[in-house]
Amino acid sequence: MEDSAAATLDDIVTKCHTYEDFLDTKVTALDLFYLEDEEFARELLELGYRSSGLGLKREEFETRKTAAEAFRLSNRSQQKTLASVGKELKDNFLRALADREGANRSGKMKSIIFIRDHNAVGQEVSGYIDYSHRLKTEDFEPYFSGKKRLLPRPTDLSFYNWETQASTSNTSPNYLVMSENSSGLLFMNKMDRKILNVDPKAIPGDNSSRTPLQSSLYVQVVIYDHITRKQTLTSET
Image (cartoon, rainbow, N blue to C red):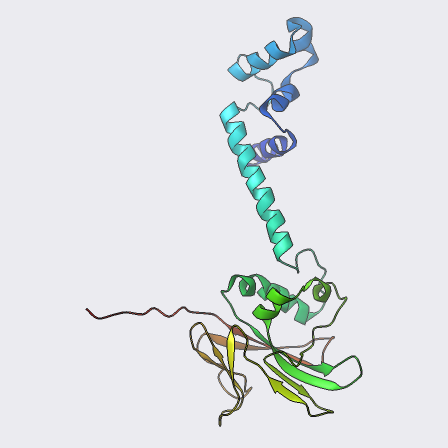
């Protein structure tokens, strides 16, 4: 009952721009008939001489109004920030990207996406994408809404065209590519300097995980998640 009453108050506060507007919702036709003064009727209500339904002091109204506005702005800000909000995501891969979007935008997670599929001209391509970096440099709304397909590019961490055999690798703001080693392709996170191993037969590394996904949109998809840990430096005195 208390939760229901609080929800009703919050709804009323949201709809009323000022405390006077709120008082007007409590003034009845009978009040105006006897008092013949709308302002006087408001004053009596505010002083608590008559209770009609839900009572609310001016200070409580202002507090609830401020909280409701803060919640509204926060919700609107989140909807602007997260491109996946409000989208109907039917594919496993897109749902997985949506689950990781907030953490990758905030910096808590630095995911690498492996995709193998065919480009617009039918050539098979594959590569590793720095998800956090792409989120900051590109609008992902078309991907989540199904208007575009996410594919690796020659500017991503790693790219390979199986038909032309064109191959590129690039350091990103989050990862250093370590391609010349006996362990195969490795990525070093620049924040905590942890190594992420993308070899499916190897352990991904500290604070890292490997998630293969079945997708109706791509031939092959794998997401590597790395939880970032800032290094803490201690000095001896």
